[in-house]
Image (tube, rainbow, N blue to C red; front, top):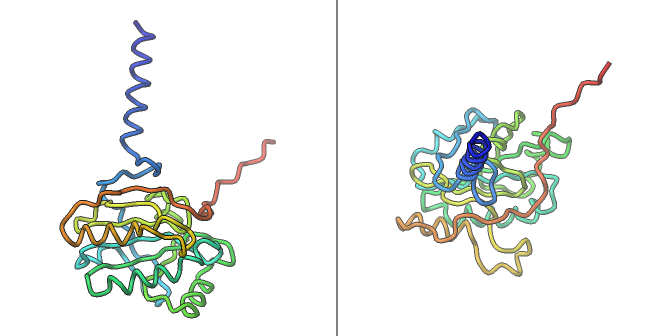
Length: 206
């Protein structure tokens, strides 16, 4: 009897864990309330929060950095996405959480100026926002709907090579949301470099 109870408990816990996370995301599921960020420094010298975007009909949050070749390759596409939806009350916010020298705040400012970033670019030295969103790659995209629920998460499009792109996942999601429709594809695998989450150092045994 106890063995059956133990097995049933394990199954229930496993199912509960599965229901709490997406297909490819270890933390969030589609429809979850988007974790809010607050007072993160931007390259514009101001501090930014999700709450300041209350007038936006949709928000695109992208985890990126300066040091990842994949992230660099996507910069022009993010600029184009921002430009294409600029008149449609869509806010694009990029955030970097890596703490290596190539990704420090000063490097972010220089990169943004050199590339002509037209979107908000934030830095979170605590790395908490990446943990809250279950983000593991750069670039990795999250689309938040009008109610600030997760409508899509994963890759920007279907190919790291822009010449081979056939489906633009984030743009398609935004178009659906702005037309008050549910996007058909809500989650894909993000392809890029691993986010450099700091691991606690182990104490040496005496």
